[in-house]
Length: 512
Image (cartoon, rainbow, N blue to C red):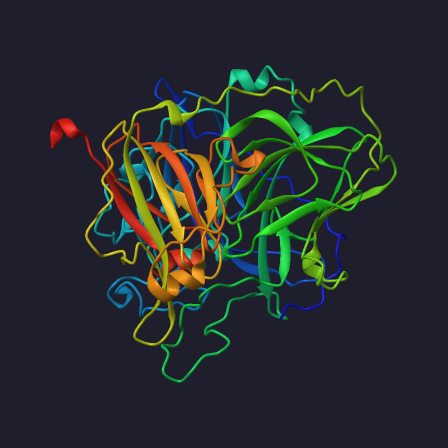
């Protein structure tokens, strides 16, 4: 349990935009190192030991334009001892170094050797490497549409701990079409990374060594089935505030938490104007009173403070009707509308934003039925699997390059999972409920209602989708532009690490 911390007393930090080490005809080149450091995350907390890219938490933001390539040398300069409890009983981790890392640019269309494959890990100074390690400098071509992506650690069996320690940052792709819309920009466009953490009295990060209902038979430390911490941070500061002018602001928001989802609303009862999701701009601006944000999902919203001059607006986390209204976790951050208006707000809130062609018009080559399954390991711990297969089982999903497929995610567990597919952006087709009790009795899928269209803000390009319990969630995707080995997984990081992640291979049929 974290010490009692006063809310809204620290300013929201503005995340540094990283400058390239050099620019060449081939694009921008960066060198980013993973470092251990200490930082005060709240006025009343002692400095916290963290891991961060370039010694920052969150890491610096990388900005680029569509079609401009970016190269990054991600260097591991971390100590040999982890700052959090490492369970070495999973994925044969007892045979490999405790501290290892590899970076995944989430949402990026990259070749497999730059995607951050979990077994492409490496240690300090590249002294030791995993079985699929192939390069020190990652290449991001950025041929995709403008969007907010984010980068984070993706090392096999330890992602939850490395990200919790601080290894996460944002990455923005821009393009001319978006700029032409005259959205709020420059100092009026602010990225927000929402995270949750628990702190010890000395300010250090707390992460449990054992599940609450532990037995003597479990390994120690032992992986948790999930972990939602008790304190919310934005841009690396606990419950911060931001001074704003009485005008429109654009906020690019990512949920970087391990497990926790957020149901965001404003206590002023004003709406969000959502303009984008994971894969960039939506077709049209949506006026939405609340936005649910699962781990790894992003939203792009405009908030208009013009009618709240001199007031305060709190970004809340709606915990439901039975929650304690004074609960700390019901708050995310606060806006103080106390800055004078510098000049007339000439930014736009356009109704029409972008064109998104439907993939349903494509030739659909394959429909895959993929179950999200609950099981147990030899210690009686929860073991969540994709299609009842472990990471090391033979690869069964092998889309052809350029093929369009429908993946039906059949969730027969008792809770929802945010499912992320690497390489591609997909479209959500529908969700259809079925009788889970009947399925558990006889294995039959009995639908309890018709397919439900995705929510309006689920109808853009997505790379992470919530697959609710007792529903079939269908997504459609074109598997391009690269061949090779990629992964798909639940983005609850405790699930991903054990063992809710599977490889898939994109195959060029001409080479088969």
